[in-house]
Image 1: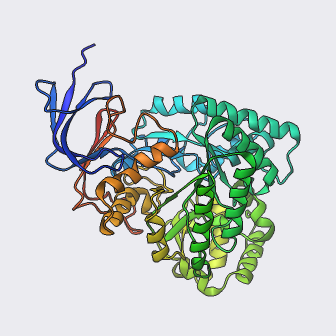
Image 2: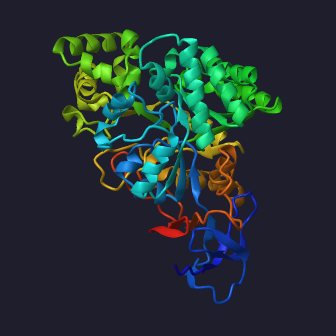
Image 3: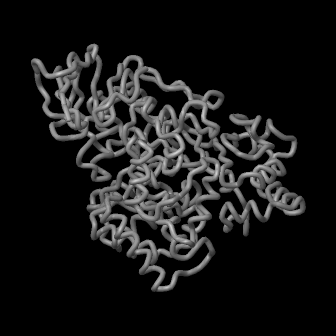
Amino acid sequence: MNCSKFRIKNAWLVAGDGSGPRRGELLVSCDGRILAEGGPFIGEGGIIDGSGKLLAPGFIDAHGHSDVSVLACPDGFSKISQGVTTEIAGNCGLSAFPLTDENREHLKALYAEYGVSFAWNDYPSYREALQKKGCVPDVIPLCGHNTLRAAVAGYEKKVLSPAELGEMKRLLALALDAGSPGLSTGLLYVPGKFASEGEIVELMKVLARHDAVYATHLASEGDGLLEALDQTLDMASAAGLKKVQISHFKTAGPANWGKLSPALERIFRARSEGIRVTVDRYPYTESMTQLSVILPGEWADMDDVAVMRKLRSAEARSFLADRLRQERAPDYWKRVRLVSTGAASGRDGLGKFLSDLSPDPALFVAELLAGDSAGTCAAFSGMSAENLDRIMSLDFCMPGSDGNALSPGYRVKSHPRAFGTAPRFLHRLLERNIPVGEAVRRACGLPAETFSLEDRGRIAPGLRADLVLFDPDELQDTADFSSPDSPARGILWVMSAGVIAYRS
């Protein structure tokens, strides 16, 4: 097999380690590795002209949910077009493995809109499925606690037996040994919400032995934010765990905006005591998750498949609508935007607020969830722009889209963050006079270090040739809720493992 080198010339290199741009060239091998930096290199195969722009390591999305979508959209356009070459997936407790008879059919129903077979069982066979599909962004998943718990004990509300907890610990250790960078939790969701502190601490001890990371969607990001943060840090301390990642760190709801300072005090104290707390954030003030998170009472303890089953009858839908009217003020629906659904009743309303889609939003919600509880997602207003800037200013905050890898025009729609997070994150930092070298570090070097990705995140010989050429003066997201799959500006080309995967 012939293997020729090529060089990238006429670019300003931003190494991903916080250092500023420097003039230089890169020599890249045909097996997708950086051979050398410096130059000029003479007579080394093909030449790529950097056009005097900035050449950085491929950006790393520290918090994504492409576990299944990337198998349906292996081009990963929404990621690659914004310069993202690696995604940390398996977040919020939901990963695509491990699969057993207890959870396989449930996950197939949960992701039915993507038409994926779920023919794997564990981390290695899942990664093999990604490779066979030729997925362009490298999706590296955490082991999700909800999936892990369901693999052993299903989705019911229960206290685990010692044998069940032991099996969870065994499966987690196998995933970590195979290369998964850690465990994620989504303590707001079924069945993770049923876990005791003792259960989580025991799993954290497994992480501590592997020097792995614990990434958590806190049990509350609003009214109970400080209590949830205290609980997480106390459990980490009890387990001897040194790496904690707070997912999409936020203060949800105007009544909770003032909690950012005490939350940061807790994080800084934990860091001073030896727990390496880091955070990720998408640079938007509307969140997005499954609409079913607003369900009240006993409905909140049901998984999405059970919700759809229960709502088959008109009587059940009417009952749920009555409960929602009792618990939600009429103005609430003006802050909830329909983003994605497979339910026929909502297909023409994507991107619009529920108050504009029906004179009876509560009943409309019941109909949406009856048609597609798993796939119906909504965006929720209620975050502070000032707090967003404070969080993004932290030198341990990295971009996390909380979005899926999607192709342009794909039937599943998303929050504009799926196409715009990395450019918008960098643009906001540069606007606030963060040096470009430091801004780039937060988008690649920092997440690579956090998730122990030793072969990427920096420009250095021997590392993967994941690279992005961009113009900082043009860098800007263009997606919005009416056109959520519009690609960003300023990303000139993207290389994934030595292959040009995107050109603007």
